[in-house]
Each structure stands twice: as structure tokens, then as C-alpha cells.
Amino acid sequence: QRELLSLSKAYEDLFLIGAAVNHYTIDSELSLLEKHFNSLTAENEMKFEHIQPKENQFQFEYVDKLVSYSERYGHQLRGHTLVWHNQTSDWIFKAPEGKEMNRDLLLERMKSHIMTLLKRYKGKFYSWDVVNEAISDQKGEFLRSSPWLDIIGEDFIDYAFRYAHEADPEAALFYNDYNECDPEKRDKIYTLVKDMLEKDVPIHGIGLQAHWNIHDPSMDHIRAAIEKYASLGLQLQITEMDVSMFQFEDKRMDLLKPTNEMLEKQAERYEQFFKLFKEYHQHITSVTFWGVSDKYTWLHDFPVRGRRNWPFLFDENNQTKEAYWRVIDQV
Ligand SMILES: Oc1ccccc1CN[C@@H]1C=C[C@@H](O)[C@H](O)[C@H]1O
Image (cartoon, rainbow, N blue to C red; front, top):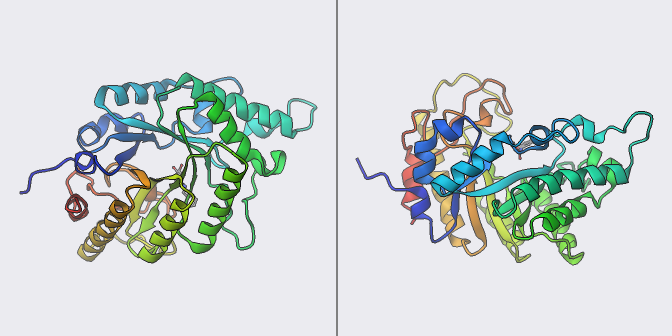
């Protein structure tokens, strides 16, 4: 039985190793979190609907808990996420009684949310996913339609970054998205960020969610995306990594545990991913998993509700999987 090495220690000269947590898993997974990770992200509890469920009613309890744990156990913190079309309170897009919703009112509400959250935790979050998933997956469509876009206009993105920078000038501000290695979407993300840089919008990095699987995306597409984003001279962070045992279109529900060939394939893919991250470590400043162990992952309900998945380096009993050893052996 080989000695269990710390992931974050093994990679400490390359980039931070992060995990997504919630107020429960930060306790239940504490031993793994303390040993293997030096960055934390709130999986859901810092999204708009959790922070400001009603206008001017803020909920900070779980953020305060995350901050106190991070200070006690030595984790840096990523903030996720300020402006997104999902998990956002409905009230923000509704006009007050008898009035029309308009651009200025929504900008004011966006500013209040960002200022309140970032000023309260000023200096405690090394990076923020300021805008999440604004680029469209549809051929020929640049920005995805959302109330943010429809009510404010295309510059809602610029405003979000400017408000965040004003609130916490120290934080590295990220644009975050998924399917980020698909050539068409990659080129749109690149164009969006390049245009922002040309307008002197304070953006410091691109977040690659990296919701990948054991079949795709190809290493060529991943390398090409890292190269293209890195050419903008910004930080890159892998922000939500998990490696699903199923391709997105595969809705099979018959498996109660992964097959041996799935586990071997997953180990191979993780080895290739971390070999590539290491090659580009001058550009990559953190790699965060969207969870800790196979016990809990959003993939148990997405895209197929109630279908188990096994995407991480640690299994449902917090034991190391072959993938863990192949990642550790990269350094
Ligand atoms: O992979 C996807 C496919 C379709 C929509 C969204 C996504 C990813 N969307 C992510 C996943 C889980 C959430 O907890 C994160 O906040 C979100 O950024």
C-alpha cells in the first residue's frame, strides 16, 4: 500500500488544487479537504438565489462558515458566481409595482448585489467567477439570450466586471464557461474576452469549467483551447472539473458501479489532463474539482436524474482510485 501523498502538496509549485463544497460537505469531507486541497469554491451557496433571495435580504451564514474554515485549514477561496442566467432570484428581473423593468434599474440591482457581497469579503477571495456561461451554444448566436442580456444589453458583462473590480480591486476576475474546448464556442469565448480587453474591462482570467468525460473532449481540442485562451495573456483556471463515466448523450441508467474498463479509461484521461495542465502551468493558476469524492456530485442528477456517476479521484468511501495515483505520479 503506497503512502497517501497530498494532491495540493504534490502540485504546490504548479497550481492550487481546489474542491467545490457546501455547508454540509465542508464538515463531512473535512479530512480529504484538509489533506488534499488548498482552494475551495461554494458549489451553490454563493449563487445569487442563495445570497439575496429577496431584495435587500442577504444570507451570509454559509459564506461566513466557508471563510472561517478556509482561514483555519489554509484554503484560498474562489467566489462563484455573480451574474448568471441560472439559480438567480426572480425578483431581480421584475419591475416594482406598476412600473416597467428597465436597464438602469437592473444595473442598479446588479451593482448592489456585487458591491454588498464583494465588500463584505474584500481580500478573502483570490478569484471570482464574475459572469458565468454568457456565450451561446447555438450555431450563429454569440451571447445566449437571458434577462440580463434582454433588459440591459450586451454590456451587462462589462458592467459586472467593473462593479466587481471597484468592490475588490485585489481579486482576480474571471469569465467562466462550459463546453469551453468546443472549437466554435472556444472562438466565441476568445472573441468576447479579447473585446473586453480592448475596452479596458478589468478581466484577469478565463475559467474552463472542464465538465469532461472519459470519451471527450479530445486532447487536441483541450490543448487548442488552452493555447488560444493563454494567447490573451490572462490567467487560466480549471474551475469545475469532473470526468463523467458517460458521454453527454448516453442516458443509460443500468450501472450501480463503474466497470473496470471505465475506471481504467478514467485514470488514463486524468493522467493525460494533468500532464497537459503541468505543461501549461505558467498559465494555469488553479485546478478545482466540482466536488470531493464520488459520494456526492451534481452528475448524479445531470443530465440524467437519479443516475449514479463516479467522476472524481476519490470513491464513495473516500478511498483513492487508480485516477488519483496517475495524477500524483505526474509530478
Ligand atoms: O455542464 C453544463 C451543461 C449545461 C448547463 C450547465 C452546465 C454546467 N454548469 C455548471 C455546473 C454546475 C453548477 O453547479 C455550476 O454553477 C455551473 O457553472
